[in-house]
Amino acid sequence: MTCKRSVLALLIMLTAVFLNSGVFAGSTGESKTQGDFTVSKGKKVKLHYTLMVDNEVADTSRKGTPIEFIAGAGQMIPGFAKSISGMKKGEKKSFLVAPEDAYGPVRQQAIVEVPRSNLPPEITPAVGMILQAGRPDGSSVPARIDEVKKDTIVMNFNHPLAGKTLSFEVEIMDINPGDSN
Image (tube, rainbow, N blue to C red; front, side):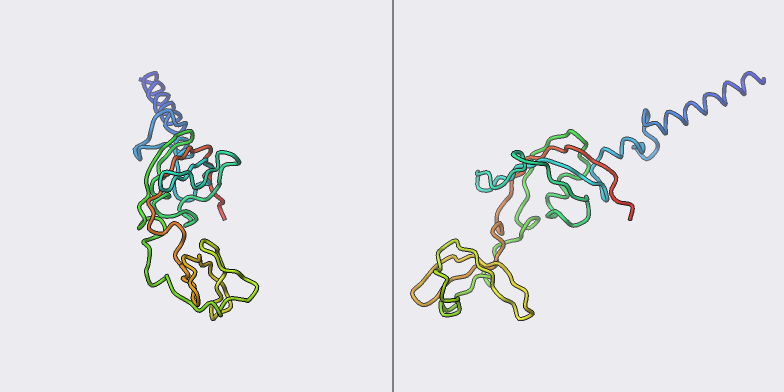
């Protein structure tokens, strides 16, 4: 009888050791060890990405260092954050992000025509030029010149990627616990 209790106690201890070591998933479906390598809220994520817009590479980290951010901290556009959630270290993925989950649609009210006389005299306006427009509170906001007319300039205050579907290729390089502060 004592031998049976000792064997049973040993089996219970070994099961607990295996469950906590990550060899088996616990009742939550994931062990602590496995969770450390999955993108989830609060984790520090390091990844390489390539962003394609209109079938052209708009940006990539592949020629430099990976980007780092805290998952779920609002540092990334919503569609990107949602698409990488649950990815594991070493995993690669391609996905699309619709405008409403990225920089929003093009808002026509954000495209305004202003008199050329509002520009400083040393600036020669050109299509595509980005200018900083002053706000009443003293801050500034970027605006792209969409059209130059004789007496006016068409300024676009939309984000340059507004209205665009973004195509991403990502590779998760590392995942670490975020700051505990």
